[in-house]
Image (tube, rainbow, N blue to C red; front, side, top):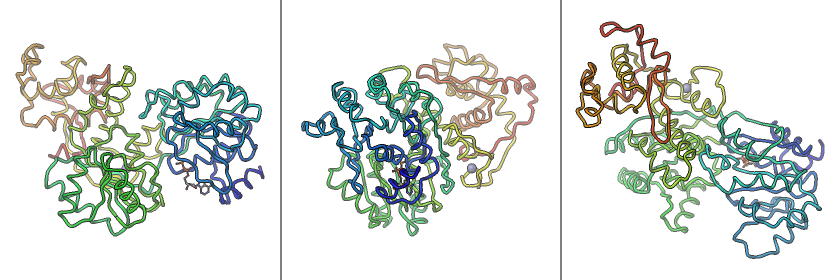
Length: 513
Ligand code: ADP
Ligand code: ZN
């Protein structure tokens, strides 16, 4: 459509649409409901910015973050939030005076029906829900206010509803469609593959030797662009900053307890390239649209792969090769209860536990990281190896682990799916803890047969066996249990205490250690 293109040129100064933008915009203009799932930075906002300008009717955009659009080349945009005292905006809005009206979800649900009926007389081009994953308890950022948005469906009868998000697993997509009551929606899912990003993971233990390694990694890239180091706590931010300073590396700091002025100063220096390195909590990130970030390092595992994908994805926006390293310690994976905090429903708690579990799997994986990441978001990766992650590039030694795998699987089998991985590991290590004696696990012939390896070694083996499909881990309520899969049962069936079929595994850092 010519008007679409002239709107694009006139208001945005771009010469062409990106392929999916054109599709989505066309469908919205035809009043079809849409679900747009595209990576951050792919240009989703244009999908809801263009239709209002083409059909000359207000577009409603629900967004949790009120990042007001700049007054771009004459687009009339305003924001209506619950805290707003001034009623002028609301009055102008209901007269259809704005091209785009941003609203918080609370406001959209509480504004009087007369507001909508008045505005409907002027016409509404679309009702867009940005960050639509917030609707789902399975998402990584559930917000209860989003749950009520569907009530507007019966008010805004003839208005196309559009959900947009940068991260949505299959489950979350399903929830968005159901919760917003999208009718026969046109679903656009872009590729999440950021092929210029290298993904790597390393286990670490807190201490000086780690900081030395980190400093070395950082000094490799400081000349080529900026680096963000994400820490999970403010204490870590302070400690890493201090260590970097001691090593003579200049770095900025950013976290929620700093005053607003210092935060803004840090942000400014970084964006303007006056500061190459930023050590920060995840508070640093909103609205960072800096193209030349060369490296994102995570010091500690994030609580979900959705978070990891978003945070690591801040590097390499310019398409130039960039690096994402994630350093984790085992204790990162024990924070489930902490993350559950004061969550209300079981579903929410389970979602948090499963998200953390997926992040843990990503960390301990011996196969291609990219493939795992993409498949987590429901995208098939066409190859087994990407050639641009640590597991695809580092040639790892392999070893026949049949004996150890047999011991662990047999022990898990004896636990009858009632326990997590710690119990069989403790049994193999010969523990006489009360829970073991109570369950009479000390009587098992396997008890104490695995003393030669440390608990973490056995856990690492357990994770490899999960990754290879011999074991399966399930989250029930907030507990995880481990059991032997069909493939594992077959392995056990063809094994005896003296003979096991060959089972060769890659020696990950943890299995070597
Ligand atoms: P998202 O909402 O998906 O994270 P944005 O809408 O913020 O992405 O867009 C990311 C960047 O891409 C912005 O700088 C935007 O101006 C630019 N952009 C979007 N569409 C186009 C286009 N058709 N041509 C050129 N640049 C575009
Ligand atoms: Zn790979």
